[in-house]
Image 1 (tube, rainbow, N blue to C red):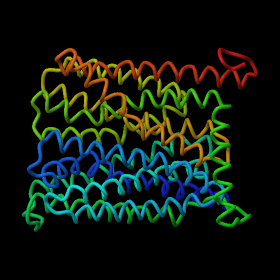
Image 2 (image 1 turned 90 degrees about the vertical axis):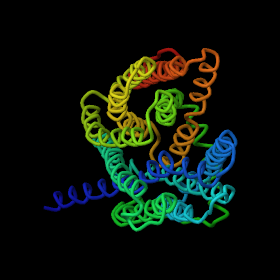
Image 3 (image 1 turned 180 degrees about the vertical axis):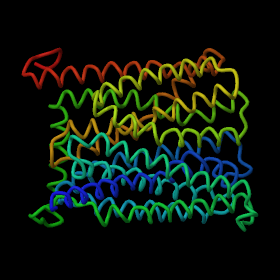
Image 4 (image 1 turned 180 degrees about the horizontal axis):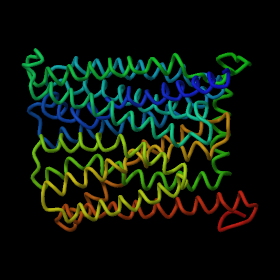
Length: 433
């Protein structure tokens, strides 16, 4: 009986952890991918040249990425030293949710205020994910880690997609929801995302148990220790060659994945799809992502996460090549379904695979580097696509610039696996000497 009760408690804790993906994915779908870019361009930058508003949004996104890159390693190292990953997660969750709700404040033309609030919200969202990911080893052992990580992404697709569908309905029919205008509906969606994020985060904070640090340190000591741990994590990363190669692989293939996600709307517009069609495709990605992410977690338990990620990278190569040749809306929706079947799995399995490759007790520090790598994805891809499009004069040719990113990621992931296998066998292969 105690053993059964313990197992039930572990399952509840794992589900509560995974539910955080349901909680915060509304921000990723409704705010980042869906409505804020349109809100910023059409409302906050009303009357401004389209190129100028696009540049402003780009500066904001880059500034948010830089802020997370600077803050995350120090915060992660301090959280590891103090054993307060869950508390820091709570801080960034509240900070991100509150600033998301405040996005409803800016009036037409107030792009500077909107920029600062969006920068703060993205920083809170991104930083919180570092500590959420870092709790995974404490929640699930190595046998169930892939499945639990996949459950998180599946719930994220489900929750993010459900909230996105509600928000689309609000924006398309604001009068039905007693909202004065489309812009009023968008602002209401920001408030709704914040409330959703906070409410569904509660189970994690109630049920997830973080290993207790018995020794408490002063603030000054924590700062000193956190800096030392950051240095140690980086030094340790340089010594873990398989992990280092994995991060290189992750940067390349996630740059490709993120570029596909962020450029899908632009590419759809270039072939004549309207806004409603694009929103439908985004919803399809969310719907397909739920069962496929869970399925890929099960497959990874049998075949190994690395093999499944490699197969998914090949699938993305096929998607990009097919996208360069598609001619109609049916093909676009078919590719959206394929992306939905692969996107969650490659993210979930990458996270759990990385969790199995890092030292115990230093999860937040190492996940800081992991998330920084992820935050800087989609930097090279869009630039390469833009340059190739300008050179060739064709968006169909330009999209092929993403293929080398997936190929490079697949090669480095393969090398990482060979190094890990050689190390486990006590033998030497390539750089493992």
